Image (tube, rainbow over the protein chains, first blue to last red):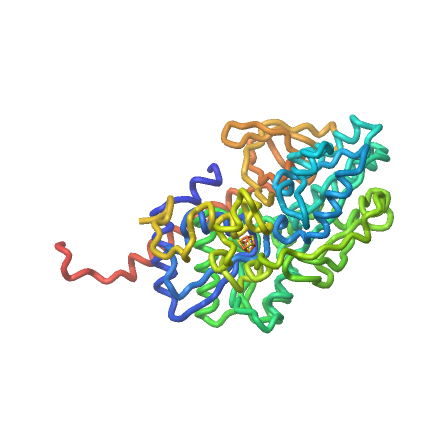
Length: 374
Length: 88
Ligand code: SF4
């Protein structure tokens, strides 16, 4: 078992598509939460395998895409400060702030470095005691324990020159914000398998009950997505509204307990602004008071920076599943991966970039599905 | 960035803090933090995200999911009515 090829079998994918078709009697709109799932759906042409009654809308589950523009401006203000080494995951470097991106700041002579893991940033701080090293700590629950570990490790090593610019977001409050919106059209969710790998899925049970909506914890391979869709549609057709776990090979009900413990030792819950969605109560993580010395917003004087999003970009509507990327007037013209206007065009997990990359410019029905098509 | 992929554990080092190990992703080897994998063994598959193993893949559950695929196959065959045009 390699845990990849087994879940990409084209003949089984087609059988799943048939099975979904056979149980679907009316239109249903499902949302996949995670950008990684969006990527699989677009790359493997999953939508083309589904009956026309099923609409998949792409949720706000790309941390790069939902990081508000003012945090980016703060990141650039810190990165431009003399004596700073600013470290970040690669895909944050090209996200536009109000006037530039981190790569431009680097080109202007600042020390901006891409790291693979938050622990690499700690290592850089350890090796450069005369510099202030800042790590751009963005992400969902999946990334939170890794970023928490960087602070824990910096403290263990007694580092005084390490801090994080924290813009952590949480999935369930965003789902609740979508569900309680009068514009909501989502009738079922594919919950993000790796977020649940860390957090478990107990917190989704009250959401499924309160909003009467099926929530299926789903993996990232094509067959995972198809099975997740099948399970959600079957619930809808049978009148059930429950939390189910399609991704049991990775997700336990209680999640990864030691990782969760580290998150709550380092972070506490806070209100958080989402790009295009505004402020959502209790939807983010920030450092606990005991760790304030590691909070880059306190170390550097950037708390007052505010910024407005580009008016041309409809990322907010895309991230709420109200518009498809190709419905944006800027899509593919003014806005391309080379010159992104908004974050969903930057990250490989962003809906706009996924549609652009795989040529889904008109809704794509009838486009031959790659890999799993007939 | 949210990418998390399965890899096979090749080495485990519990003497360092946090615990580290070497994981192979289809032949490419990377150092990975194994701090949250208390019962991991060499040869296990783990899901790795930004240099951290976040779960040990459960083979039984994976086989169970694959079995569901098969069963679906069977139930569809049962449902399929014989095609009258088809030569037998
Ligand atoms: S295509 Fe570009 S401008 Fe339009 S919503 Fe997507 S990122 Fe924003």
